[in-house]
Length: 472
Image 1: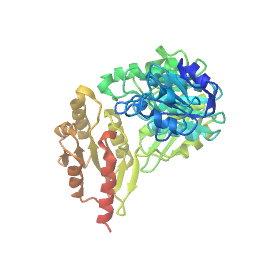
Image 2 (image 1 turned 90 degrees about the vertical axis):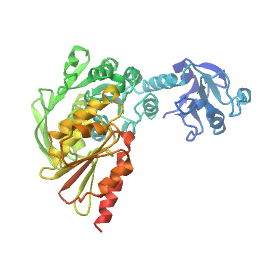
Image 3 (image 1 turned 120 degrees about the vertical axis):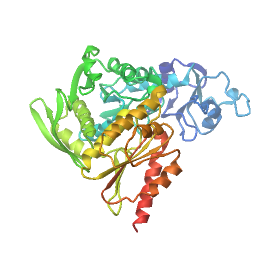
């Protein structure tokens, strides 16, 4: 983050002066008393399990330049008010809501960088992979910043924006949502030059009830893209192909299965790569992508469409896609000494992403015995049992060798399955014990897929170790 004056912070958040000197400067923003550095501003955020106000004395002792809080009194753990004893060198600012203020300051800070080309990505599936492909492309031309990990919410996005500096030329930020109105808030903070919705699917249905509800939440992004910017539209998506009705910005459409500005042809799927051609207007380029599954071609097209909007050539896009490294726990693959293949796609799961992962493995490993290790899909609301049952019906139509299920809701998947080799475990220990019994050989592929909260990646790692020990 670049140095800023505290008076500009106060102006951005409409903060009330409590004490200190607004004429001083600061060099960063923090919400964490454990990692705050001298000269940074501390925002005292209230969380579900903590209250940042409880750590104000600690951050002042560590050299915080300012504190943004929402309490009239600043107290120690014993309840003693120590406001008057705070050094005059520390600025204390009071606001009604520190979370809102964090976003307001991020929005103000972002406006300093008018020359940085910024892409904002949301969608039910593929956000992170698309982001990483875009970063790989953008790095061909200039220094690129991106949000890390799950920094895509009302805390994570502002903290990511604060990493912008004048030497950055491109930036890519994810925007996630689990509550109504979050995309409106996040996209208003970001004001991207390019707005991307990868797809609309069965995500966060606890809140949004249906894909229609997801679309209503996501499409608000269109209104907050800069007027001089553009929208990337997925013409393969039944909701997003209607976007021209809602969008006044320039549109660049992409598609696998429909007419679009940017499209892919001659797709060939392998166990360790995808060969395909990207077509734009009257030009095309052949690409070999280090990834699995047809859905990753779609992710590549999203990134290509965005890069084209920013003036990249197809050759530059080819170099970026071919040098991209897939993120962790997205079709991440290990092979044992005896050639058993284990695929970790357990970063997250919803009804559409599980289907796509299964199809990707079937497409990439023709002739192999495909085995599924599936945990519960979380945050699906009142219809969770129905969605899990429908997944079982989908699996019935595929050429699957065995299915190993884990979790309460996955029981409903088992009820729909007619495969002879179906096993259900209530907990991770039982699942691991069951997997130990499998006589896995070199013709076997195991796909691990579940919502993040199921921690299926731990079973994946342990099963790999079991197979390696077995074959010593």
